[in-house]
Image (tube, rainbow, N blue to C red; front, top):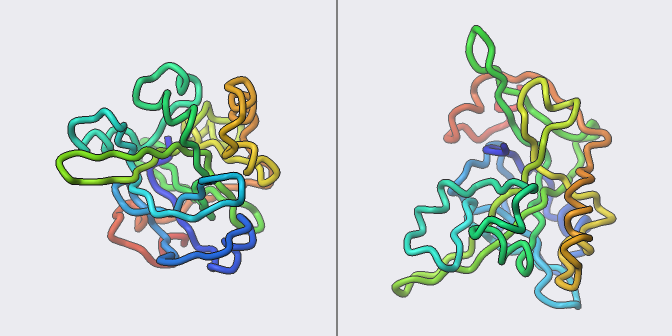
Length: 217
């Protein structure tokens, strides 16, 4: 599962990492929670990548109520091609979700211990995601979900799931609408966790209203 993350890169770092011509409305956040607006990277055409604002919690185009997004903040990589909520987006509407770290909680006899998971060099990376366009009763919403997979040896001691991190060299293949289902499945089977580390932090991050550097202490 991925239910909280941070995005601390500068606009310049984002533009360089994703070869963006422009970036507007972006601000750093130490504690991003479901339901909030987050940054997504999409490829609207073959000319380049674009940064867009997406609601975290995917709302399928056929949904009658946008509240379904509360239950769809994550999508399991193993069933993307079969689940009605994700099947169409997996085929046509993939995105990258930039991050500099994410949080997970390990259950202990004393309670839940929060962990910060990030690159050892603290550099930017990107989750694999899906996005959707929903319209109903005059309302329009662009939303997304973060794809998860079975935890590796690093994450498994604290949680059985982890978000899929896409390697930088695979950014464009992941977004390319010409990719086959087999090629996409193969990208998801190789989450890029080289250089990733984790460490325990205080419970300040438990409250999504706390959004400052102390969340990482």
